[in-house]
Length: 182
Image (cartoon, one colour):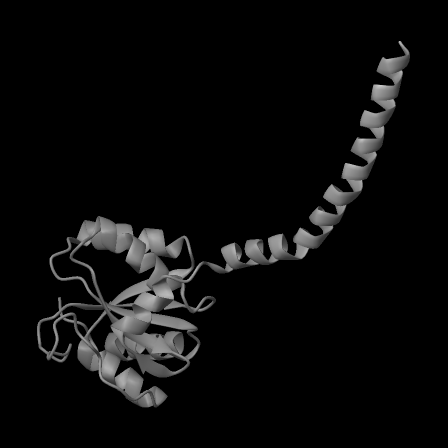
């Protein structure tokens, strides 16, 4: 069943709105993946508030042009681009975390080796797959907050250790005196 013009316009406006408000965007090729595999990936990404949507290249180019984002979409193979017709293209979009789509897709690419990260958008600029792989290696926001709390609590923990050492030494001396007298 063919998609009507109204459906295409609705998809265009929705994708434009999603990309306008996005903090992190990653483009992927998913050639060779089954529909069930793509749906499983969608479910995993949705748990982390990342939207995964299959788009047509012409539609994506219109959206990027409307948003004023210039640059060329990269491909996994050097010297080629996603402008080659027939390549399946999908977009992972996060409204909350810049690195979440890249990190999650890198993890999923271990289960789905045919998934190829092609680049993305960060701060309204096109980024290459090398930048996407660097983003994927960043820890999550929760991990960073945990590390920050640990760093902040470090001096207090050290103070408690030092102060408890004096009390412990005093107790050991008192116990030794008690043992000596008995």
